[in-house]
Image 1 (cartoon, one colour):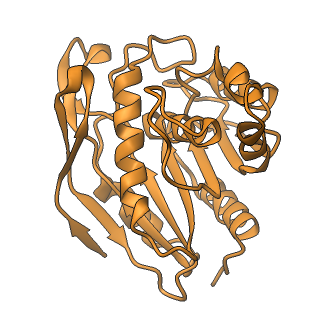
Image 2 (tube, rainbow, N blue to C red; image 1 turned 45 degrees about the vertical axis):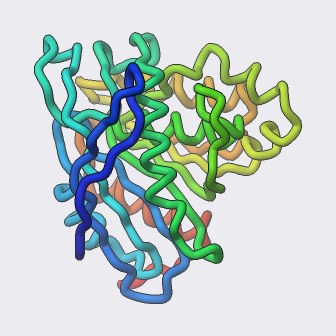
Length: 255
């Protein structure tokens, strides 16, 4: 595993947002895909890089960035690592569109220098999953919420214990307004996994996010639920992720 230093991107009010260190898990076999994996609120890229390094997916390179440290409304304004500001971890919460766009641009930038023959994906947990789903919406629409063109092609998006932010009310209109957007939405594989006992991002948010995506034209959506699972991951869930990625990206599984 290796890492590279911090970088910056535009944020609220035009100010620069300083992102933390990115941790990279190199592929153990032929490099066929690169996935940016996004941690949850208050976490960092290092914790997930260790788990991803242990997965039997030798053809995937993982990039695990660390979010910027910013005041978070859910914590009374206390600063912590967060992909965007949030006061309610649900599809009904207030949306920090500028923060979401800034993180989506940072993620796209991390993937933009990958080889042209390598498939690109984004995944995440909790708030990281919300940022991943926002990136999926931006990719399908062809632009960020700000109107700036979305620069990369996505082949897979994964959400663990997350929710669909900001675009839920307008997403269908954005997708239906463009033939190319409808085609991108139709062909993008998305996996959502959620525990029925999740006490932080309720299970219903996972269900509703899936419903919003499907009704907006994302027909390549898979939703998996886990009895008794709270706001964390388990081997069964990660095994489902491995199987799904192997099938959707055409990568090998070892062990």
